[in-house]
Length: 336
Image (cartoon, rainbow, N blue to C red; front, side):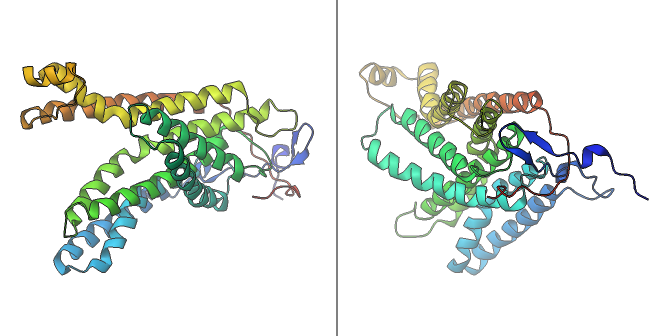
């Protein structure tokens, strides 16, 4: 006879909502076979091999029909890999279906909402545009997550981080595909496949430290409000607004890092003519001799921004307790 631990059948009680399911541990708690790569590594390596093969084949054959393959593989490879990694650390409430819906639908809702609001509110380019973009894009991603997660059977901060990362990475994948498509037509009169490859390689390196990271932190803050809610549902609270503003600030600094790097480069190595133009309110360009300095400063600013986000996410993750596993009959209200 197999002995069953009482914790395996004891339902989770959420005040005001009755018994709700506490499914068993997620993929991340299961031991994988010895010597076998984790799921996220297999996904990444498989996708990387396909992308690396597709690029030279397209160059060699000149078959433009393969360009969408390169764009989709390159844009979705890193975001999907990190979604699989995050899913492996979720509990049983965050199912593969919910992660898929958050990634695809949340990403699409975020991109569409951001495009509409930015077109309506940010018509004139200005230095404040970075602030507007950060506030708008973080708001639409948070709204998409809130909408998609409104019928979860229970809420924990860690689940919020996983689903938030899924929404943010879906947004990042679609955004990267758009940038890659735009880079394809960068050279007038011809298609620039090299620009597509360079754009996707750069954005692939940066993808884990942008939208997915910021929305993961926001998702954890959103779900944490459910623990303090009378009905066990996420609510708009001052703490959530504070986290939203902080993530919008990181987003703004990330987008503005290129302009800040130009300014710092000119202040450190600028010629008298460039400094005079700056004093007059003009924006002189970086010369060929200053490109290396600009590149180092730009990457340093991005690294600082990413480090702050990662430290916050790790601290928030460690501060939340992983729920004890249990298995009961699903609650009738548990649906996506």
